[in-house]
Amino acid sequence: MFNRSRRNLASWFTLSMGSILLIFAGILYYQESVQQLEVIDLILYKKARVITSNIRYKEYQGEKRVFLKHLPVLGNNPPPEDSEIIYARWYDTKGNLKRYFGQLPYKKINPKFTYQTLNLNNNSDVSSQVILLRELTLPVYYQGELIGYLQMAMPMTRVQEILNKFLLLLITTVLITLVITSLTGWFLSGIAMQPIQLSYKQLERFTAHASHELRTPLAAILSNAQVGLLAPMEDSASKHLRLEKVAEVAKSMNTLIGNLLFLARRTGRLTTEYLKEVDLNDLLKELLNSPSIKTAAKHLNLKSDFSESPIMVKIDADLICLAVINLLGNACKYTPAGGMVELRLFSKYNQAIIEVEDNGIGIAASDLPHIFEQFYRVEQHQTNSTNSFGLGLAIAQQIIEAHGGHLSVKSEQGKGSVFQIKLPL
Ligand code: ADP
Image 1 (cartoon, rainbow, N blue to C red):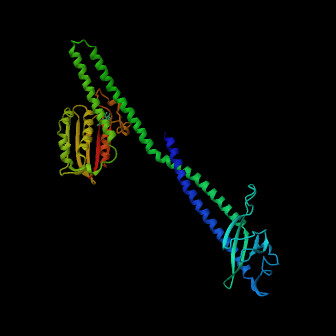
Image 2 (tube, rainbow, N blue to C red):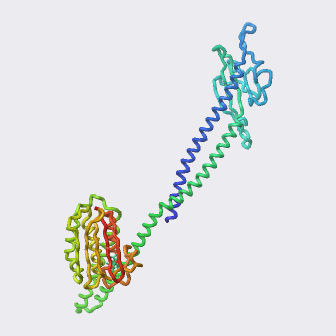
Image 3 (cartoon, protein in one colour):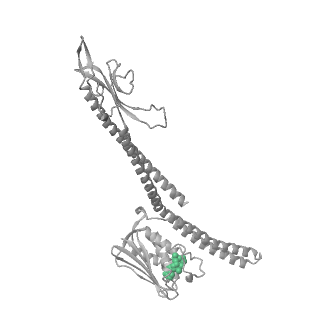
């Protein structure tokens, strides 16, 4: 799937870049052709002017006549070999041919100043090489009076050669650039696919873990229900016990689903409209006195150390409470009876710092890099508790990062752990 998307992305990139390149090359070729045509037209015009400047127009036997015999090209003397003129023709004012040099002429002409490109082969033989001519028809005036038309043509071989070379250069450049573009497209689409691939893998892992975690309590519910059903009708004590188990497992399932929904829904940073200026001192004091924390820490020595002055932060108070509850809950869960758990709050370098320290079982160095991953649980720490899904720290980290903060841990096996939350002030 990802390879196909990558191929599609690369092909579209190459196609769009290729089209732009082709249009650009087309414009360049067109401009070069126009320029070359202008050059040959100018040469042709200059040659025509040389001929026309030598024309004599004078009275002969009572009427005015044009004398052409002494002209270069059209006159009695043949033109020099390097003149490049294929033909030259002189027409009178009515367009009738009077004199010519070179190829057999048209009988009549269109009496207008024109340049036109002609195919010498007349398209008769497809296989033969196309030889193009540039032809000029020039009306000639003598003291403001039209005296005739000069038509002459030059081969466009040189222009064709230059344009062919230019075309070859353009094709080679376009092809090389297309190859480079497609390689770049392939490389760039690979980079573009990386984050998508990563989040797809994460999603896959998340779904696999979630379904696995849900299957266990579901199996427990089913087996309890079946055992309860098998018990004799009058054995209400046994049925009651099974129902209690079902209720307990359903409760933990409810927690798990709640956690999963939380992780799935909340991604990215929180927008400021959801944040409120809160004094962390008040918030954490209230939290520490809540019945749930008191119950969780009833077997422990729960201490606190808060800042003297208020610490104001822009947060979603419910979410920050949830993160701290997860950390405090873990500290209480993984500290043996009689141990100590401490909640601290202070500010440092423009940051509010919340610390949860315990002197419990601690975390092995090999587990430390993974404990914030979803569904990660340290195997040796597992008890029979049905409420341990390995999601508490992942949720806490997601909440802190959504506030632009940072959650870190220091721990030593057998000695205890310190979880630290840093929030921007
Ligand atoms: P769980 O629901 O299993 O506690 P968490 O994501 O909250 O999931 O924690 C992941 C794992 O990190 C736990 O399984 C536990 O092994 C370890 N852990 C978390 N906090 C502590 C702590 N304070 N002391 C020792 N181990 C801890």
